[in-house]
Image 1 (spheres, rainbow, N blue to C red):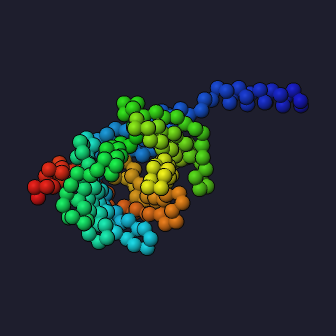
Image 2 (cartoon, rainbow, N blue to C red):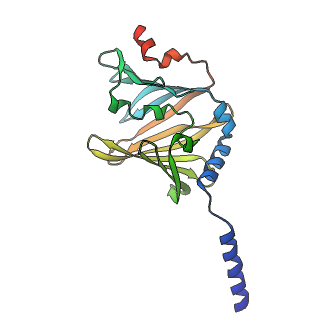
Length: 242
């Protein structure tokens, strides 16, 4: 009996050694496949999301438009007045709810705008983008476990991306940011994935900042892909002429 137990342990140990842990590239590939595949993502040339943002008991509309290569625009309301933040591929600009005029954003406000315009996200083609990735095991997210991927961006910014070990869908991103009062941790949780143009997109995003009591919930009401969006929508020069 003792010898049989030893044999069983030896077989189990050999199996453990011969089954390597998931690499970061394997986790990313399986996640993309679970969402519909890299080819479908790359085939998506533009996206428009119409959403409602709820924070502190108040709800406001939000429209986000993205277009390859690297264009981004968000239309929302600030204190009831229309506002815009956009990236045209070279510079960031916004429509101020105070001046009501489109103007170039200062460097600190523009930081990260180019990354928001990346329709693929930082995990896709990360080597070409200059990011460094590593798997740091798994973390419990609610009642499930997720692969924890450390993302050191080319800019030096640090993020942690969490991929559910069963569904292979992205469920959380934690980013280290520097706020007015020093370093903070911002957390985004993703859920309610739905298919658009053969690819799964999260329809619910819950944002929070550690130490801040009130979070923010974004609920997508309509998401459209491969629309014809005029480049002028993203252009500061074009907005100034209007």
